Length: 169
Ligand SMILES: [Zn+2]
Image 1: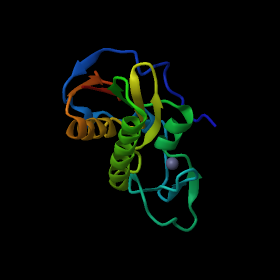
Image 2: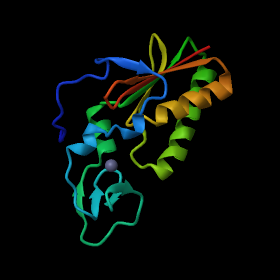
Image 3: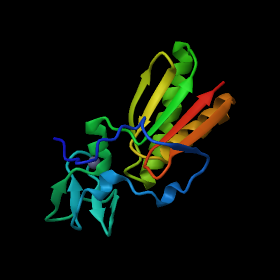
């Protein structure tokens, strides 16, 4: 079910600025479109909305149900972040990159339930990872740099909730 009612906007559009922008002040439009009461439970992932944010918690009694913004982005295949590992990788290295990304996701989403991987795909450019948020991409990129060296480039969309992180050897 599509619940989002967002302006026509693709992640590829819009002006970009490089570097560590003021991304913490930028709200995810997917969250702004929802008005939620306390004790709302996401029917897809089980996250609980309490005191103004989604968290991992036991299901409250008399919960009302909804879809959290991460699950809505996953269902819509609408990423807030894209990490690309540019290059041609052998099977083993591709698996290593996917494992590294999943490991970062596990650590990140423990504290931040809405920060998740949507997909990991191999394309002509290399390995492309879509995320539901703008924080996990940097984390994955930096883990990649630690493991494989190379360079990282990070570009935030100005005034928007979108980031693109590129790793190159
Ligand atoms: Zn959810």
